[in-house]
Length: 251
Image (tube, rainbow, N blue to C red; front, side, top):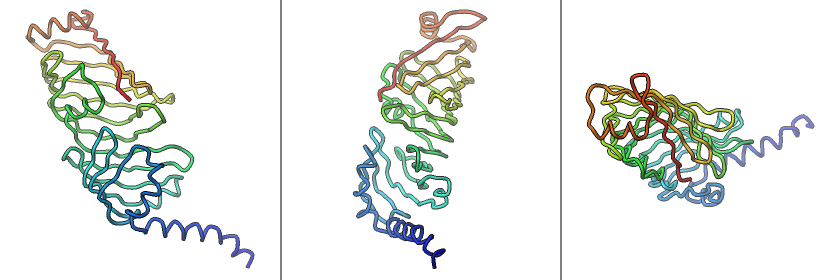
């Protein structure tokens, strides 16, 4: 009898968890709204275990037709996690979203596509105007209070079009990033197949400050505006230019 009593609290906890995750999402989620911070859900159906929201707002991003599936085995790894699938600006995306029992929220295995125009708008960047689509394959996205998320994964931008401050076709651009121990995102950027070839390093600080340092070379004849831009913002050398560009992402 005493041996059985040892497992009674575990059994009660498991039963309560079962009741919560199988309850209607529309009734349960409002009780957790304070934990979701700026996240807003509308058009809820199903349960916490498996359900759907017609719209999920994570300012400035709007998601639609978002479905989720509870991943109970993640509890063994010390996290509460859900598999997500939905639409981002009309394009399919998927992700594993969770929160560590002893740490903060995170995203993993994030895949999808977004237009460069939308991405620049969400980031609050107006100095540069882009075109083309970005396909993303993100292994890990880490969040910290009052900080820009740190990202590990790969972004592919095609066609890599810059419309302002100059008009420029970079062909295909790929950015591969890792998260360093201090929360800094650091990545390698390679662009080729367009008017310029580029190889450089990108860093993103937790305060939103980012920097691009790289070597740029002309691929044949380029418009006069491109030559003027490179002469103004980059230092000539080694048959090309050394570019250093920095700005701030609005948090």
